[in-house]
Image 1: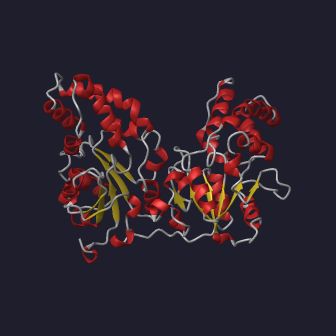
Image 2: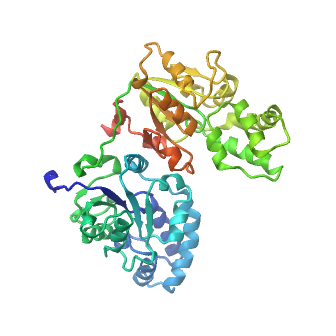
Amino acid sequence: MSLTKLRTVKAVLFDMDGLLLDTENMYSLGTQTILSQYGKEYSWDFKAKLMGKRTDEVARMIVDHYHLPLQPEEWVMRSTAVYKELFPSVPTLPGVAKLVHHLAKSGVPIAVATSSSTSAFELKTSNHSGLFSLFDHIVTGDHEAVKNAKPAPDIFLYAADKLGFKGELTQDCLVVEDAPLGVEAGCNAGMQVVMVPDKRLNPSFTSKATISISNLHQLNLEQFGLPAYPYKPVTHVIFDMDGLLLNTQTMYSSVSARILAQHGKEPDYNFKMKVIGRRSQEVASMAVEHYQLPYTGEEYLQIHESELHALFPTCDLLPGVERLLNHLHQNKVKIAVATSSARNIMEMKTKLKHTEIFSLFDHIVTGCDSELEKSKPDPQIYDLARKRFADCPDAGSCLVFEDAPNGVEAGIAAGMQVVMIPHHKADKKYLLPATQLLSTMADFQPQDFGLPPFPSDE
């Protein structure tokens, strides 16, 4: 469709499976697991016919197509058991977190309209609760208002209604889909449809979509009158360390949980969000007071650290870290670390396995630095890291990577843009302040901030 024919929209409705979450590969694996017991092979051509349909329809079609000695209800029971094991580990797809966060931050009404049942939705999103907290509404396929499944328009019309768009106003909604049935449903609702098809799908299936793109990074929001991404070019990048470069946060959480369990207490996630990114002495004192533990802050810290120090040398880099750091270094982009960890603790985490990758940084500022008086969320550590670059760039030329709300607040207070890669439970109030949201560093597009693109992205 020509760009001049694209209508301005005011709200966006998202499918989920195969569009926000990479569940289609999980469905394929789970379905084949059961079919293999009957000597059957799950074909892509048949799978394409199932995409976007409700669970009961899928079960009936599979049983009929493969002539299985099962009732559709039995297929649902068996497949549900398999998916229960697979779905909690499902990842998001490229560009999802960035787009959803940007629309929510810009005040654009957004909703999920998924054919999944409520129970399936909860299972698939169990490790993405923060991302889905950004949506204004979630409509599942088993909702009583959704009388007819896709390709009927019911689910999109109801989702639009929930956002305040009904009657003629429904055409002000944009549908984003991956499945042919979903595209048809959006068209039947009188809405424009952006399709992000599986690359294996026959191109003929994209003909009804308004536009077709290969991933959500490619969506040009301005074509539909939506706010453009506001990112500004940078020249220097500063990284937090724990939970951002290294997977140490799981270690902190597991040790804290064990100590609390000894006193009949459970971790408070909201408390964790308040302290993550602070210096260890502060966290220990705050934990003792919050949980009313029978220790001084120093005693708690000693117990905590004695367990952690045995774990730290085994920590791994998080996904996408090595690729990005090597890429920035090779392109002569100045990079630094600003971590609340003390120098000796930082070395404990990096010396055994990560000396080479940490040698790429121009400098590393730690929580025990003699010039550092205040910890995150105060901006001092990021300001100090900026000033220690040889060319002392202005704050607007620096990009911060953070996982913690306190760190995001510190970076923004320092006058810098902040890319947040949060814990999956961090909800809307913690996510919105960030400049950009990602589910993993592997999804970062350097060109968003005027940095050299990865070779494959050029």
